[in-house]
Image 1 (cartoon, rainbow, N blue to C red):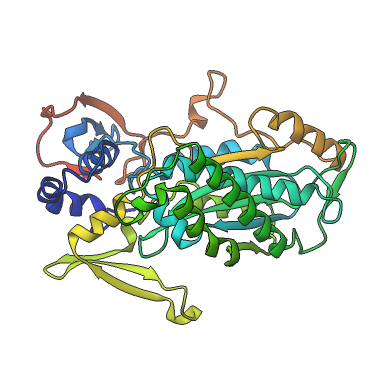
Image 2: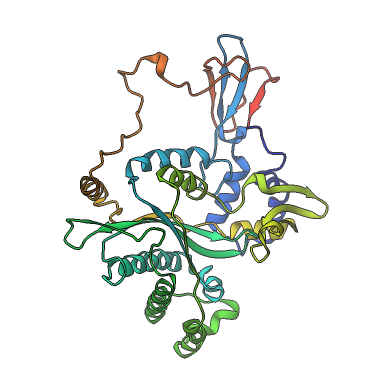
Length: 398
């Protein structure tokens, strides 16, 4: 796939320096690192290598990627590796997609309390699913859950929510039976919503009582216990959005879905339309409209576009994909083996890895010549900011 006509990196390189200088007091180190990484990604600043095709003598320069998890150009390979690892976890059962969304007032205070509120979103959503599923009035089983955090809406506003992929069933309390969901039905959404609301507000109140929440600007008054309690009152009565979709067509459909969600960033380069005197124009979906009328374009000033993009920089070390219950990392392998034994199915084969016993002719080359299809070889490696010795008239892989 060729380089898109416009990239987030182009916007950062063009408008970033002046904006960073104007906003230096309002940008944290993580945001500055993300901007720097995206600007330098696949440029000489990060080094790279020269490729040569032994068959047709074609030469190319390939610059190194930044590998930052917020970079629109660096997610495809990471997503592929993750999906290959997850293939062995799939079960021959129906899978359901659930979404837990925080109300707008909590999203507003989440920006200055990201690590805490995002963690609560993960933990309370997983607890809600496992509690209702464990209730004999509903499923009466121990389930597994994979949750993926997204913090944006299509217009790049702060909109924290988690997408969940859940097998349609679980182990009985004694671990001796597989308990399947009713066909086409997972768990009652209204019951999930009520418990999610109650438990999240309980944990948020507890965090406030122990001084873990920080408030600034218009929310500074919420540091007082009485003011915070009053602020929570309407949140105890409003509807909290929990959404459950119909089951996927099969395990491969689950993988196809996950490939679109696990390593997504706030906006892809493919959604960018133009950067001109009017500002930055990009495609977005307005979910308030009917299906055919949802696709629209939006134009923002460069400053506003960069501000919205950087709203979604995650705290350092924060994991945005997490597994719970039967799929928790500590016991996933044993739990899946038990489930497969109960379902009387063979374990899924792990993807083959290249090793010394594989004939060289069967190993997929890392670099393929775009001219003749032969395997290309690295003939020169250059470090960060180092000039290359190769002739200048080379095709650059971006």
